[in-house]
Image (cartoon, rainbow, N blue to C red; front, top):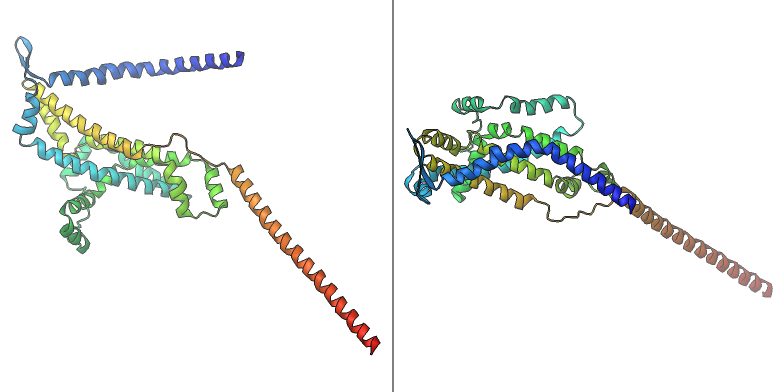
Length: 345
């Protein structure tokens, strides 16, 4: 009982220390994230105007949302463009970053140099740099519209063809966004238990089976973090078509119509949260307890298998010995019969 109480006290002290370290972040989150978020919700139901007397709030209910969806001619098309960008960029970033992390995690020459090359765009990535890349058309490198396969897909489904065309037309930008996801996947690969690979190799699994049965299931939680990070990252960069509209709406409606800007921001935030929820549903670990057979258990199973094979061989050898003895006795009996027959003759 004393040991349990002692452990519980140590745990409580550790929890208190952890909360003390988290306290500055929690205070900043409350004042700079949580409070502005709820205040934006409050503003979205008012017509807010700034005059010589200060801010004037006039309750209009859902009027700002009606203006955004039914009176503004730019908002709805930009929402559709944003949905297309998220549905194309996020899966492409996940797949490419996973492939590149698997390659960069192998024992290849100049591995550190390749890792630096792939992470370097993250260092220089900023709003002005992104603007210059987009304006100079540097993000478009591959034109797939003239390829026969693309035309066949376009005849079958124009929507799927638009998605594929968007990926290839912005392939450079997608690679630009894979810097931090590659680091996250490499971190997940390096933290993976190497005994699982050794046990799989003992059981005779090939590289393809190891990838699908061990590597990918263990990287599922990392893929969830990468997906959420990619959704949010795309939402705050100018590659997203609705980003500039949201920023211009906030700046142009600061003095008049701040409530309309708040409604636009809330709708935009809700779309981002929906994509985060979809990523969580698709990539979360459904089983709370994942059974991992240890290397010792695998070796024990292999030892029992080898003993069984050895026993079968021994039984086979024993049968052969019995058969040989039986044949020898049979030959002796035949020889005695022949000798007796000769004596009688």
